[in-house]
Each structure stands twice: as structure tokens, then as C-alpha cells.
Image 1 (cartoon, rainbow, N blue to C red):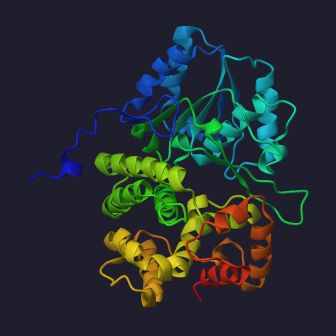
Image 2: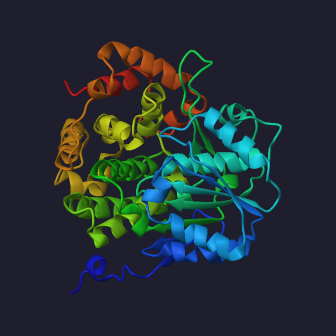
Image 3: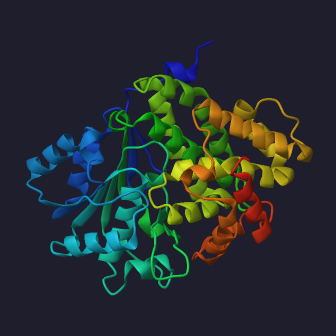
Length: 407
């Protein structure tokens, strides 16, 4: 009997429809469809949103520019997006793009979660010029529209290219720094591209941490109080693919089949939490990366995941035992195994090359109270916390943070 995952034709570009207005093209060479998106959207001008260098390192830039030049389409470029982008960066990009903005302007991200989330936010703000980025991320208005939007994703973890979420940091002006999120179907992109060729330049840490991000998306998305059979089905596939192909990708970053399936896993992990939202790991990690703005999101999630798994295990242990069997091995799926689940998830992280603690990113146990207070103060985080299958009070969050020191 054949092996579907080893025999599937990974050279074929496929089109997924959930999570976008018009389609997500996934596969090696997916960027060749970029011209078709341009012909459909008929942009007067493109506004690129990128980090300073990854958009070129990924190898897709020349194809994109060639398609613009064929059609005589001009472009603007905001290339100052960093890890955990701020509301100030969004404001700068809006000001730049406003000079050419009209109803046919297209915002286009090239990058991972940070450029992608930023592009979504910028697209909204261009259509709500009387509002600010702080207004958007403190939820003082509900977005009703956005500019046209294309997303070219070059990491396999975020899922933002096919979901209705975005985040930005508000680092000044409040008692604590915040990293709130927005969630609205308005920000589904028109078109997205997951060209695996563009992900081959990722280093080992990026492969490791973006994939752990996807793993957290499904751990949370399939255990919220609003989880559905659909989100649980997606979650099982993601865990299977991560357990099978992450070690292969780390052993050989040019393993094309492993990189293909991790890209697919990240996309459907995005669909999973788009369906059923998130809860504790993301709510608590957003506080970590607000205080440590250069923290890789997936690294922060990896620090917290074992302790969050331990917290929710007693209520959903039967499901989690089934979900994580490829990673945790053969447990019984009983409430008394929460500590074992904690240790086995940590062992998996160690196996794929991560053994960090909160000390490594600059925290001590005296910071726990501050971290808890900041989490509860962040706009919207109470909504995520409320979706946990096991209620999480401040004392519970303090325990999760404390256990993430692993000492």
C-alpha cells in the first residue's frame, strides 16, 4: 500500500478557498499565479509591506516585480516592519501609501506574520482615514472595509494568510506594553500565496519556531469552548504532519517534501483557529513579546506550551491524548496525567532543538506578577482567556508563567 504523503505530487500548485476572498495558492511555483491576481484586481498601484531584507532573500521578489513591469503597474514600498510591529510602523506605512491611494490601490505583504498582520491593518486604515492604528487596536471602532489586499507568505507557521486575525504592539502610553489583536472577516485577503520556494531560505530557528506556532494554533483552536469537529479534524492532521516532517526539515532544510507538508500544515492550522479562535498560550505570549519586542512569537509560545497543556489537560485529556499521540506517545488520557503531558511536550521541544526558559529572554520569577497584570490589562485578552476549556484566573496564569522557568 502506498504512502499518500510521500507519493503526493508536490510539484502541483493547489488552490484553497477557506480563509481568503478569492483563493490561497499553495505549492512550489505558486507565485507564478501572481499575475493572474493582478489581472483580476487591476491595481492602480501596489503598496508593498515587508521587513528590510527577507522579501529579497526569499527569492520571489524578481517574479513579482516582473509581473508588475509587464503591466506597467507602479508601486510604493514600506520596508521597515520588524518582529512584533508597532502601531507607529502602521501609521508610517499609511502615510506613505496615502499619496497614491484610490479604490484600486492594492496593499501587498511579502513576509511572515509581522508583514502579513501589518498589511491587513494598513489596508483597513487606508479606508478609515479618520481613525488611527491605536483606535484599531484598542477596539474603539469596528472595521467595515479595507483596500484590496494580497499576501505573499514566506514562513510556515503564522496562518495569517488565510485567517481573519492580526496583531500589533502598543509599547508606550500605558502602564504596561500591549500586543492586542483584532479579529474581523473584513481582513481576509483577496489572494494569498504560499510558494514553498520562498520558504527555503528560513534558518533552523525559523523552521522550528514557526512550526511550533502552528502546533499551538491547533492545541488552542481545537480546545476552545467554541471548538467544532472541523477545527478538531484540522488539528489532528497538523499534529501528524508536524511530528512526521519537522524533524526531517530540521535535519535537511532543503528536504522539499518535508517543507511542503509543513507549509500545508501551517496553512490549515490557521484555518483551525480561524474556525474556533485561540485561548491561553497566545494570550500569555502576547505579554511576553510586548515586553521583549524582538522575541520570536513561536519561541514565546514554546516557552509556555507545556504549562498551558498541563493546565487544560484535566478537562480535555481524552481528546488531547488522541490529538498529541504522535508527539506525547501512549498515555491513558486521564486527568492525573497532566504532569506527564507537561514533561513529554517539553521533551518534544527538546528533541527538535529548543530548551529555553523565561530566564533566557530576560525575565525572573519576580516579574510574574507584572506579566499577569499586563495580560489582564491588554485590550481584548480577557476574551481569549474566557475561551479556555479550563477557567484561568490570575493565580492560574501566574502558575503557568512560573512553570515556564523550568526550575
